[in-house]
Image (tube, rainbow, N blue to C red):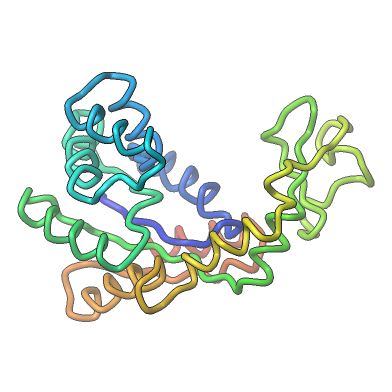
Length: 224
């Protein structure tokens, strides 16, 4: 199964992706990790990407997409993959779709976690990190994982908030890109949604408001 995922920061996309990856034995392909691997490995594409990154410029799609295709064709992806973090705009969606078709790689499922902007922002700002284990789920705005005062709900450890989680302006900029339905990330999702309506790929929409367990159950039922 080859899956592309969409969801705003704060929607639980990473959590649900990890659940799907584990159930279906998929490789989790994350765009940021691909950049790091290519740069660290000194690949030709990595060198080109680093030149742009060092100047503070965005890496062109002509470099990014071949990197992604190379990753999707590695041995660990033969049994399936879940791509996260790309595409981020409509143009990238079109170019990725074209590149996948040329490479003979069939996309099976698109997953979109639907969550309104205010709830997504609150979830980001409500995240708290446990000093003993940062993977312990604690969020002051989600009843199911609300901490015990200023203590971790799992182990009682001290909690803190990441500074970037409290930067409302930075969160707003990221969400401006995601919720843009003209040429932003949602426009990319809707590009694939239109293709799904024509057949050939499944498009699954999930309500991101319930808890992790409920969203996961809905996702698994729809994946079949």
